[in-house]
Image 1: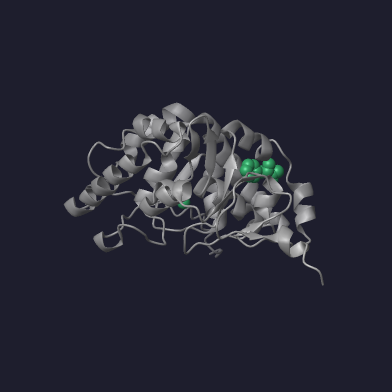
Image 2: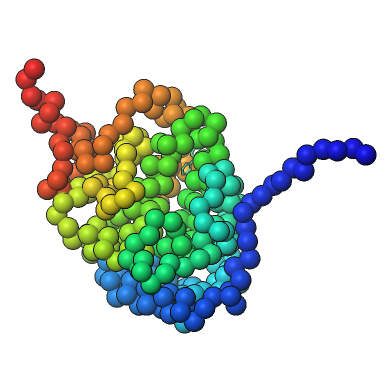
Length: 286
Ligand code: PHE
Ligand code: FE
């Protein structure tokens, strides 16, 4: 009998088991949904708000993926799939490359309404999925997935992860009404939704690809710097339409910037009160 190892092609996808959520879990969703909708009404970018409407995430309780996927697939061909929690990078990238967004199946408990480290269904579905109804943003995430697999080969995953962090998670966009939120890490967080736009302490800098990819980030606190795009079209032009290979070569020098740093070359929209301006240091004698 021939024996060979079973090659597992594990995509980590599980059944959402929508019928298995408790009444209290549905109530947690409803509470978080209403609270964020009020906060975001004049803080979120209109593409994000349009996504909330399109998916009708307020039917009562945790959304059933079978229901929202019908709408999502029709709009952009994306679908959301349930996973137990964080998945390995390669698995994550492969899903995105195939227009599948992996979302945590579980919902946070009542003691963690305001913050939890692991992405749960509220962060993933309320935060990420609405913008996937937008054709440009859907293209961006698919390309990001493909780009992630490529970055692994270049050994530049950290740099590419910073791009995800400062756009998909914590991105701001300039609109005629002022700065608006599109990043899911902001839009799914009560405190950061207010902090990102209103607080005087963080820097708000114009998005610049190479700059962003050298920037470190904090996962345990609000951001000290937000990067601001002019439009999704601009973001796509700067990323999807560029070959990152030459950039990866330049990044090989290993230079990175602390999250609070402002460089002389930065296009500063608002300088945070906590900013660390490198220009001043560079001018110091000795
Ligand atoms: N164009 C990038 C590359 O050549 C891939 C990419 C696209 C990365 C979109 C991020 C976002 O690797
Ligand atoms: Fe996220």
